[in-house]
Length: 574
View 1 (cartoon, rainbow, N blue to C red):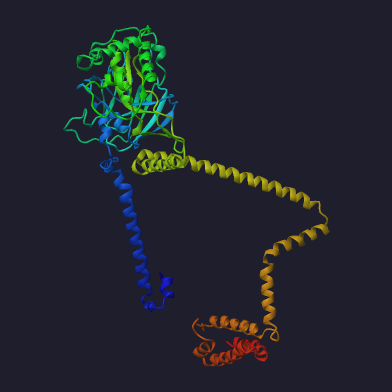
View 2 (view 1 turned 90 degrees about the vertical axis):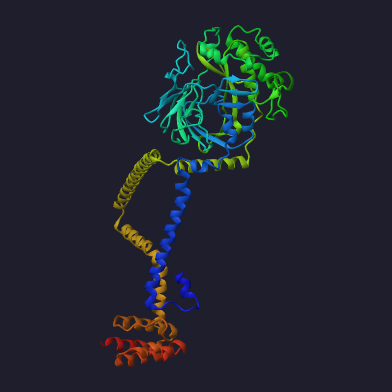
């Protein structure tokens, strides 16, 4: 701005006001900078972190996904969720390895009336998480028999980062062993599902609104339960469990369904083999589709099994659950997510709404609840292209923003500090090592040259010194050559009177400035000479200037030759 003002044709700022202008300009620039930083902090840091992401929660499309994970789910609800490609959560493995077909369990459903799955009102168990991880295997919630032969161990650890979709259920890999997170309290349902304590299912109406589920860690036992249950024939079920998970829709069911179940399991000798037989039959004899039936049927399961013979995961899971119950095996439908898309840029698994899934859990007294999935595959995965790769980069950028801006807290500060300390320590160690190696190489090189020089004769040493001097002087050769040329021309008025004139006039100005006579850039040589207030000096400088101008502009050799003499006369006087 100041440079533009100087170059403009408009009138400039008066000299007496330059200081005020500069201070005002600096103050306005600083104020604009502070306002910019404040606005950026408000928009990008403060607002996104209000109550752990609740600021943006109102803009999230959550109606369909919330109905799929409530205590009452209409048959077909999961199919509606699968129509969306929106991200639900990101999962990062901490240790262990995912099973070939991973599932993330949300909640289970017990009662089915032929159209809707519901959960009865159950006694809740509230537990705190602020003091450390919660051991889910020791809560006595009825999900694990007292005489079970297998003791659950942690084989998989992972961290879940939830999107602000308003869900109050923690999604856990079966079999859940532990859960940990910055939450005041959680509710563990009798079926093993874990909810935020302040939610619409189990929270008290007078409770304060709890924070959203943002991030948590968990451990799971992902071992194959088949060795513990493959020979299971026991019917020693707890009374309450049998009452809840053996009931049929409205106390009755289409007679063809139990007949089909018996036909499928005719050759099975254990309950586990019967469950596997039903699972295999549905997975191989029926087709998968996300298209929902156009009209609501009075008995959708019978229509699915004996007429349409294709549907989405809820129809497969509901059909298997009902058939297992007709065989006297307690079973329930589980809603959650299946699989996920791996992002190699962040090392996270991306779980989307289209990954929503329903499967079956059957109860075996020797082990507990075991998962079965009768749904066939829904098609091959689309090959990776430029757009899908770009989506991975966008997801990675979104993950960095969420973790280091929205969810940035004391734990992130400590982790960042530890990473910086580690990186700084490694850099310092590496730099010291490199510096020491370079020093050792320099010492060795110097010693080798010293040995070679000690072997040289006097003549060879003299030649080496001359060559070294020439090499050292070589970078200054062009500048020295130009200086010599100028000096030669300045002392040869016959060949270059103009150069001689300029040379002596510049020397005169330099000497006069030391005596307090300064030439302004806007002054001509004559104006400068006449402006000198000392009459004696002014007279001599005017004479020098007359000779200078004739030598400079008329190329007068005689005047050029007179300039050194006049210079000495002016400078020689004090």
